[in-house]
Length: 625
Image 1 (tube, rainbow, N blue to C red):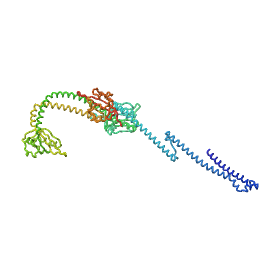
Image 2 (image 1 turned 90 degrees about the horizontal axis):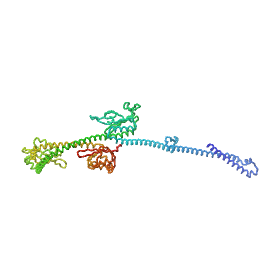
Image 3 (image 1 turned 180 degrees about the horizontal axis):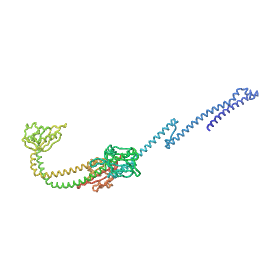
Image 4 (image 1 turned 90 degrees about the vertical axis):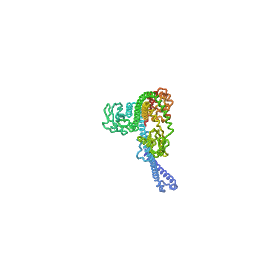
């Protein structure tokens, strides 16, 4: 149809050219026909051509104008063809762009194709846009997958934290809950929990405390040596072991339809602060994804922390029970000792009276002190007159002498020891036996003090002594009458010392044990005054122990909690009966005013009329990241 239109244009312009030429020829003929020359001769048409030879050329004019019209029409048709071709190309290009935009709008990025022949700037820009959108779509898809994985891990950790808060006073029940949740959440086939234990010979081994397969609890009695197999290797290296090429005889998963070997095995150590508490082993018919391995590793640290806390709680409860029994025994012994002390009180009063008299004698002697100065090797520097009179020497007789002349031969070793202590900067004070010039035995109450200069060097030793020879003689006279009383008093003192040592040792041992606990531990007396506040409690409340020791326990709770919560109200009120031995979830108030949910367990210890309450607090919010 389009070719027909162009042919029509050619014919139309050619015809018009010819028609124009004919009109010109006819016009010229008509004009020449009325010319005077032709009219005078009455000539015909033939005469006209004869008279005007140029008319023969005029006859060719329609052919010339027709040819010119054809040439003009041909030029027009070329322009029209070119415009039509350009319009067609633009239409095709617009259609391609429309399809490109529609595919982009519907997300069909793979269907977007411009063609390899397109090399213009717009095509290149569209191709770049397509490639960018494909890349963005892939990145969005990858981000969506990663976000789903992170959500999966976060939800799993939150649910796992709830499991760890339950049944955390029984390791077997806790182990089964852990492995059951792990197998179900990971959608795997089999798993087991091996906890570290020690036998009577203090040899470490791993015991299978919980095992599950195909969502069913399995009962297995299995022990693995500390350095045996993959379990032992995982514990020694303290690193995760992941194997996808398992030997056929390593582990077999059995169901009602038969037996099969797993495709992947994941073994993760349960460790906290580089200490191994156990190993968790998981087997699956499909390979574990990296985010699943990361999830198991994160939960492993929480499991180890909980197991550590449970073991400490069990040990603490045992120690607390033993302490209560020991306290009751000591209370009985204390009562017996009190009775014995009352019986000896009368004798002690008499001894005190005589001791007062003896102190008076000593004070009288102190008013006249025997003084001397000597080098650290014992060489005398100077002495006073009372020293000379006491030892019965003349000044020139002791000049340049050593302290050895005042000691008996069998006590020279004592002098060597005293001088050694003085060189090290230690003072000496005590009653000593000395020898006079005449060989007489005297007793002195001596004090030796090093004199130190500004550089910290010892320049000399200052000696102050009092003659207590008469006192010693009196003591020897009193010794016979006082011997029996002294024996009784010594026995009583020894018994009291042993009892107090035992009490102090138990107290120190328990405090050290409680200080290292992961749970916060607080001890109060019956008035509610805090007497013990361990490091875990400092971290939980944010207080230093010197800020709370001696304070009332109510400072650790908000006023609203202390009034409305029955458990806390009974705990902070002196007259209320405390809730003993029951684990309660309450809110505490830290140093910064924040309310924190915790698990509270209160125990009581009674020694005579004295009561002590110990609280074991566990943070409900388990930190998993």
